[in-house]
Amino acid sequence: MHKMKILVLNCGSSSLKYQLFDMTGEVVMAKGLVERIGIGGSIVKHTKGEDSTVREHDIQDHAQAIKIVLDLLTGPGTGVIASLSEISAVGHRVVHGGEKHAKSVLISDDVIKGIEECVPLAPLHNPANLMGITAMRKLLPGVHNVAAFDTAFHQTMPQAAYIYGIPFEYYERDRVRRYSFHGTSHDFVSARAAEILGRPLDSLKIVTCHLGNGSSLAAVDCGKSVDASMGMGTSCGVLMGTRCGDVDASVLLHIMEQGVGASELSDIIHKKSGLLGVSGVSSDLRDVEKAADKGDRRAKLACEMLYRSVKKYIASFAAVMGGVDAIVFTAGIGENSDLTRKAVVSGLEFMGAKIDDAKNNGLRGKEAVISADDSKVKVLVVPTNEELLIARDTQRLAK
Ligand code: ADP
Image (cartoon, rainbow, N blue to C red):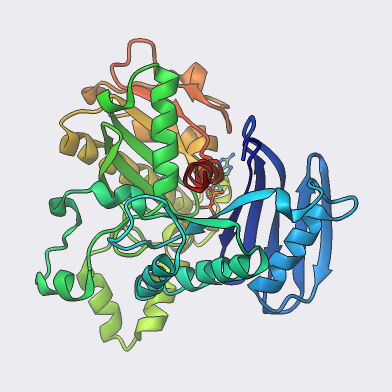
């Protein structure tokens, strides 16, 4: 096991993303994406260094997709390993671990049962994750599989942060509570921010802002999540690309009373809301910012709502932790939109956070401290790397 090669898999309902890491130096040897699994016209994109191969296949299920990926990893031209025996272990991204898993875990029959039990909490994601795990166990028998859960990092939240103000029996009977997601990302960027600042993680109060198509914030106190903006599902918290963010439950009742059923309502709050629903322009912030710049009023409103919702969560999480030492921006928007970072932090001078425009403007996808030198609260951009964290956990557990 001296030179470990770790394959990381992220299975969606009709897609699969993979990265093969050489853990000596934590280098990505190859990565790729399979799309349209089981719905016809499947496409495989495989990247090795600078070279990308795109192939069309008819892929029926995840097992077949994984078989193709393994062939690409070893095949002539596309391959980066001589044989599959070089793969030391496989790490799987699993969306929901419920209350059982506060850490990544070596997969056993028992763990699989636990992931199955969480299907009602993540009906789209957990079944897909399970398909990947089952296929991998069949194709590479004897190789350790590890599950890294999106919910695990937030299991340290106190009850006061995760219980909803509805009758307690819903928690006791159905485990209705806040779980929140993107845990691997919040974990990775908070730890990295402490390294960049040269201070021990267990001495820092950090608000991490994972802002992408799906967005969530976390209050990370001494390395532990103590509050987070997503809930039992992924639609609440800040305004997102197509998800609504926080909405009064009465609004949903009002919509349902107009004859809208549960599945249509789910479509509305997950796919038709957010930047897209408010602006009517796009779910992609780049398009919305452009339209706003040209004077589109609803696009401008959507941007302002996004900035305001992130700002509110930062300040409320600072209040929860009794202070804040660092604010960290990550994911597509957090890493790339200087406009968003500027708008979110401006107004937070009262609590000691000030951006340095020269450091913020034009900064995209790079690690940096972007606060002014005299800013008491440090503001950072830290590109997230969930796959690397999964690979590290997998290596540690498979050893
Ligand atoms: P996902 O949640 O699907 O992983 P990403 O983390 O890739 O999403 O984030 C996608 C979002 O990042 C989109 O709204 C996109 O507009 C935004 N984004 C990417 N680059 C920029 C940029 N240069 N300026 C503003 N927004 C950007």
